Amino acid sequence: MKNLNYTLIFLLVLITSTLQAKEYHVSVNGDDTNNGASTKPFRTINHAAQQAVAGDYITVHAGTYRERIDPANGGENDAKRIIYRAATGEKVEIKGSEIISGWEKEKNGIWKVVLPNSLFGNYNPYKDSVNGDWFINKGRIHHTGEVFLNGKSLYEKEKIELVVEPIADNTIADPTGSTYTWYCETDDKNTTIWANFQKSDPNKEMVEISVRPTVFYPSKPGVNYITISGFHISQAATQWGAPTAEQVGMVATHWNKGWIIENNVICDSKCSGITLGKERGTGHNTWTADKANVNRDGNIHYIEVTFNVLRNGWNKENIGSHIVRNNTIFNCEQTGICGSMGAVFSTIENNHIYNIWTKRQFSGAEIGGIKFHAPVDTQIRKNRIHDCKRAIWLDWMTQGTRVSGNLFYNNSSEDLFIEVNHGPYLIDNNIMLSPTAISNWSGGGAYVHNLIAGAINVRPELNRFTPYFLPHSTNVMGLTTIFGGDDRFYNNVFVGTGDRTASDGRIAHGLEAYNNAKLPVWMNGNAYCNGAKPSDKDVNFTTEPVFNPKWKLVEDGKDVYLQIAFNQNIYDQKLKMITTEMLGKAKAPKARFDNPDGTPLKIDTDYFGAKRSEINPSVGPFENPGKGELKLKVW
Image (cartoon, rainbow, N blue to C red; front, side, top):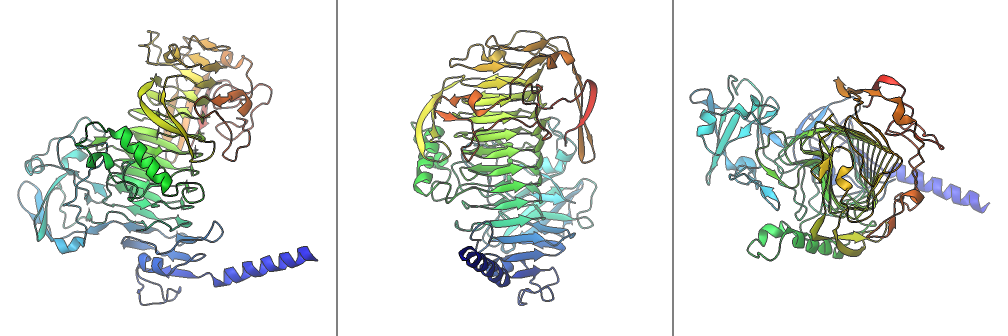
């Protein structure tokens, strides 16, 4: 009877909560003086965002919304969140730009428009320039604004002469696109933009310019448990997201907890698409602000910021636990997704990220498809990341992190950069096909059941002391440097380029680069082919030096196939199931390789999620893929 009463009370609370929840509708034909009902929708999403409270829904109908959403409230928990969603089957665009008309033709296809500064309100991205810690401007100014012709961004130039007579940049993927150029000047009253639209008439085409620094960003922390689902979000004048700065992407969580960002198309951000980052009060570009102090480098400034953040309540109860899934993210010049300390305890899965840093007009040390600092217990899985500088860059305090079942290819620097971390972190069941697969300046890693066709770059880092934590927390346990080693490689397939020349001691196809590792390493059950070589510390390995699997990646619409040949000999060795017990503990934090909840793990499924043999699992990411030449759908 007592249990029955509890059940009735629970159902009553649930029904009451459901009845209290509201659904607000937004339409391009609506009016913000309406009540938000389906028959009387609001006109702007931001107006709905000021009304919604925990448990409410905001349903946005088809059309283009040019606004910045600054939600006043968040949800209370996973079951009672505020959900922003595109209406089912309807295309909803939210843009950080405005349409610009009234272009005046000058000469040689050059056009000019004069805009009153009042157009920009309290933020003019044609006065503001991209800057911050670890940003490299290449000797010129880069404004946060952008000019778009039919949705494609033009290239800003530092002087009008390069608009009148543009020079194609033959070092990038789109040299022709780089001849579509613009330049701006701003005074107290007006902003003037000159643009070379080549043969296009801007008064007959769609020309937009970025005017907002973000699209969806709460101006204060404490706005938790928000869902953003099904939108097309683009064209914000975002600022450089240094790890020591307030990180404001086109969609940004602002030091909050429990967001879900899913099923969106996010593109054409000046810097970052999504940021799961820190806030301003704990430091904002602290190194840049302190450049005069030559005895305090960027490393010291970030350590200070880390302790500021800890004093500001950085823990699992307050921060992180986000889910970013099923998004398509492209055409961002810094990152697709980044986050300094705000991505802790989060899941990043099933995203397609590409064309990150393709214009290459500026550079810096924060560029990648995904760039995280301190991804504690963060799971990065089943993403497709290509045509970036780096696919994933895990920088500082990577602990309890798992990178699993991802597809990486055609990235110009490397697929995975692991910088000054102490682990434990797990890299398993990934396909790495870029010329350089891994740059490892860390320790405490486990690499299991991967297909690695690129080179591996290994180096110690003795000049930087970086933090590590008590297991599954943000409580700092200590700081130390990177000596080199303390890594594990089990059951991977390494593919070389057919070149059997010796390694330079630091970078090679296979594991030769570990021959001089200072700390112990563990290597077992790996297979090497087409010139890839084992380390002299490797045991129970198979090598087929002249066998070429002739892998080829084929993109067919939204599908991706891997064509590859398998040599039966590499499957004849006896392998073991990889478990927490086998992997041991990372040296510095003395922590196990386990699940985020502390339970033991074992790598008992493959890239596709198929169960592995308990008594003799297959080498590489595919369990029993078959013999001979195969075509596998990998996305």
